[in-house]
Amino acid sequence: MNASLDISALPEGHPVKIYFKEKELIQKLLGELKETDPAFETQKYYNIFNQLQSIERRFERKENQLFPFLEQKGWNGPSQGMWSFHDNLREQFRLLRKKIAKGEYKEVAADAGFLISGIHRLLLIEEDVLFPNALEILSEKDWIEVRKGEEEIGWMLVETPVAFPKKEEYIHPAQDTTKRELTFSLENTSHYDEGYMTVDQVNLLLKTMPLDITFVDENDKVIFYNRGEERVFPRSAGIIGREVRFCHPPKSVGTVLKILEEFKKGTKNEASFWINFKGRLIYIRYFAVRDSEKKYRGVIEMSQDITDIKKIEGENRLLNWD
Image: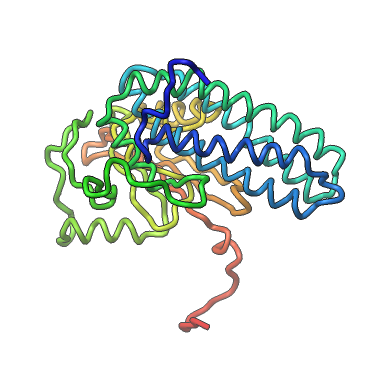
C-alpha cells in the first residue's frame, strides 16, 4: 500500500474506503478464477467470471463521479488514461465471455491470464496514484458529493455501504435540493410553447420516457440528463457542468467532437448510431438544438433500447396485457 495513503483514518462509507473493500473482493475473485479449470468446472468458472465482471460498477463510478470532480480541480489525466484502461478491460471481458460460451477452454485459460494481469495493474495504479492524489485534491465536501452520485450507479459489494456522512446528515441524490456552484447560467429556465406544466410534472414526464436524454449546451457543458428508472448508459450528478468531451470513452471522443463541429457550423442537424450492448440493440441519436433564429444552442443525445421494437410485425390495434 502507498505509504501516504492511510485508509484506516477514513470514515466508513467514504468512497475511497468502499473502493478498498471492493479491491479485497476483486483480489479474491481473481485468485478463484486463476485456480478454477474452465474445462472441468465450467459452471463454477462462469459464476466467478460473472461476479468479477461486476467490476463494471467500479469503472462507472470512477468515470461518472470521481473523474468529474478531479477535472473540476484541474486534474484531467484519469479521465483520459484510466478510462482507456477500463475500455481495454471491458473488451477483454467481452472476448473472454464469447470464448467461454463456445467452450474454447484452452484459449479461455490463456486470455484469463491477461485479464487478471490487467486488473492487478489497474488496482496498483489506483492505489499508488489515483486515490492518494484524489484524497489530497478533494475536500470532505467534495467526497460527500461524490458519494451521493455513487448511489445511482451502485457497487460490486453485496451489501450497500453505510451512509456517508452520518445517516442523519445524509440526503439521497433524488431528494437533494442543495444549490451548488455551476458553470452555466440558471437564468430564464422555464416556459413552454404549448400548454402549462409544473416543474414536478416535467420531471415526471422526463423520468417516465423510455429514453436516455442528455442535454449539452452551446458551450459544450452537460446541463441536464433525465433520471429514468432503467438507463441504457449510467449517468450521475457528477456530470452536470462537465465538458462533454470528458463524458465519453477516449476512443469515442473524436466522433463526438466531429458531430459538435458540424452542428455548430450548421452543416448537419442529426447523427445516428446503433450498437449491440449487453445483448441488446441500442439506438443512439444526436440532434442539434437551434433557436428561432437558427442559432446553435446545444445538442440532445438520446439513447433507446430498440431490441423489442425491432421484433414488431404487422399490427396490434387491441389492448393485450396477457
